[in-house]
Length: 400
Image (cartoon, rainbow, N blue to C red; front, side, top):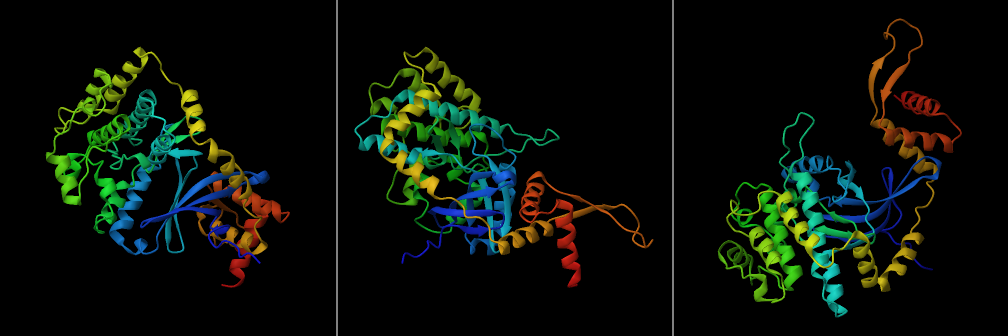
């Protein structure tokens, strides 16, 4: 008899982890579903931090601060963060699920099929990344104070293209905490190092221009097929970034237009004062070139190209996703879910004083998501939301 997969259909607070899709030194990543009223389900991604990192106060503090900033970002070209919390010993992020592939997989897939990745598609993707970066770099709080968000990890694996042609920047705002942990493990960050800016390598204060250098290294690689900064050791890679010569892309690929070469070389200026000063400036030059080129790709063009590349995987993945249905919650899980929600409710005000002997009513503050969860649980038991809350609170008091 086949054994159930221990990494599937795990209850995790109000979520169900239905399939583990990746695991690394920092986190496990799960495809998950969140249930709502009227059989509503939302497919999301849960990034669950490994328990041993939850015991490192410096990491936890930095991770939470950065993730809180990233959760404020709401832009079509940035993967949205929905929730941030802690269940058991694990901190987690619930984020938008994007049906597509990251550029770390797209370029090699094209190469394996003997298809040169089109220059205009690389530029189209880079333009969308610039748009997401500019939004984040310029983000302010409700008082107009700049949040000074810098991604710090603009790499091919963090640039995602959906099968509908939308480009998304992933893991915005949590790279600082990630890098702090990864730099304690020798030999495990070479891939990340290759896309760092000179000022990042030297430990200087970072601003938006660091991300633009990183994007330049990524775009250089897409257009030429050569990784810009390599070495046998971390020290060698760092030295290559800070001291090594950057060859014009036409050195490797003679047919790269002069205007594109100029964009790359400006983005890759080691002196950040001579680099693009904002992502908008870089995007403007890319878009100007594309508008005058013989073919300007749209999201539909990019979508069709991506679907052709991954035609052998698409149908199989759709079937896999449809088969990974979250099972209905058991009564015990429903009770546990209600207890968890109730435990997060904080009283706002009492309608009457506590010593007059009359009946009291309690006003509580609930988010929309919390109320929807309560409504779903109440409906399963044929109760109103108020009756469910009264029963749960009454049961709690009974055992005090």
